[in-house]
Amino acid sequence: MKIRVFGLSQAGKGRRSNEDSFLIAPKTGLFAVADGVGGNYSGEVASKMAVDAMNNYIAGKFETDPLALQAKGGGLLAEAIKDANLRVYLKGRSEEKYREMACTVVAGLLNRDELLIGHMGDSRLYLVRNGITEQLTEDHTWVNAQIESGNLTPEEAKTHKMRGAVTKAIGAEAGAEPGLSSIRIKPGDYFLFCSDGLADVVQRAEIGDTIARLGPKIRKISETLVDLAVGQGSADDITVILLHALK
Image (cartoon, one colour):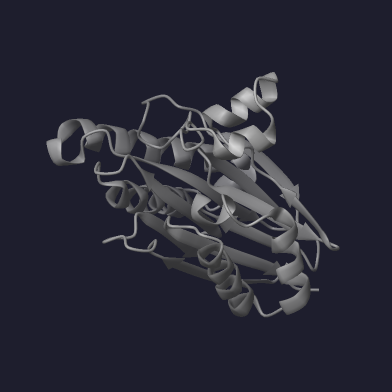
């Protein structure tokens, strides 16, 4: 399966630094978006450290065992995320300037015609297939848990004071487990990895409409979605990776 990919990240309006990081690694087939959390707790260090650690872990496994992906499948991605989690966790507890740093992450690992998916937090992965847009990850957030339990409606969650609280993040707990899934890739598919700077303000239908209007120009689609997020009031850092499976 031949894949085209483009990534883009920009700091939020008025922010001194961008706490998002992204990774496009053709050699390992790994794609990841990480979003620093914790405000003054070095989120940009956590996000960069996380994506680099994941890629280094998978590349190291490939060097010692070229068939590691075929043997372990999604287990390899899970191992990489947990390795990154532990490294960020230990760094945040060994140096005061990095105290309690953490980040969210959403990652995809190519395995022939399959995309292995792992995530922690509220960075998301969307699939646009045959004109239908689907969210492939489930937010690890307090408000999402309340929606699932029936205590909040989706509309109430949008303005709730706890809407930014994540229940899982890289570096927050030593033994945290990522959410895992996988999907078969079909020709024509678009996969959009994004931080909440985009996901919080750009609706699912707008993502699909933008891709339908501008496809297959993945750079233009990515730039347009970022501009759309800014235009709709996002003050957060915004990061996207867009994959397109060619027909």
